[in-house]
Amino acid sequence: MTDTNALLQIELLKQLAPFTRSGYAMFREVIDTDGAMPAKLKRLCAAVAAVNRGYTDLARSELGGAAALGLTRNEAASGLILLSSLRGEGAAQAFDGVIRHVYPDAATTPQGAALERAGAGEAEANFKAYFGTVPPALAILLRLVPRGADGYYLMRKGTIDCNQLDRKSAELMLIAVLASDYSPMAATHIRAARAVGASDAEMAEAILCAVPSAGIAAWMSAGMLLEAQ
Image (cartoon, rainbow, N blue to C red; front, side):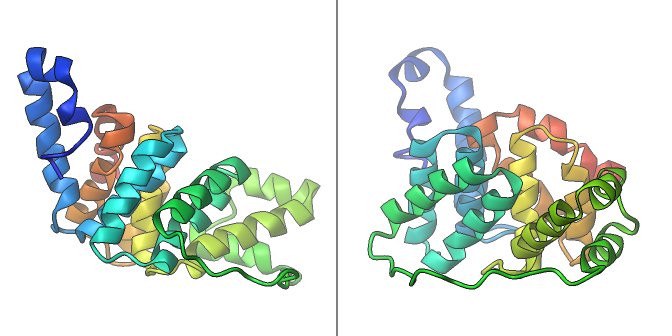
């Protein structure tokens, strides 16, 4: 990957910034090869982070690399499910376009797929089970707009339960996306990832998957959270 990486091929960087190119090549080695996390999952995390930042061409390159390493279309859809909940309709549409570009022979689904409903008290019980208590923002939502709280619960449930990889991989992907936003919410998912067996090395690699789209500041924002949790 480093031989053809777009940043490493920029002529001005070749002429003027050998240290910049060399450092970035080392980050690419982490992302592009198996380590604590498999390379195909790291390329998927990088693709999702790229769409989160609005870099569709970069996302296509990352997801194409993941597909070449054996990532299936359904596995790639884990990123679509995550972005639908975490970043909304626009990001979901953008990543769906990336998936269609990389996997052009996708099957279609009949219209009218059934919608789920949350049972009475189900959302509140889920929040308590996941967070340990109902976070203040969700307590307000439960009180003022209960249907909105049900929607939040169902979309969060989809991110975890409909993930086509596994629970740990879903949490690692969430960490990568939040790191790309320099978001303190990464701390919540670092705790959740640990709870389902993620190692510090896996979480560190997930954070580094944000470097192609968010730079080394992604590590400075989220890396320190590994020690704080």
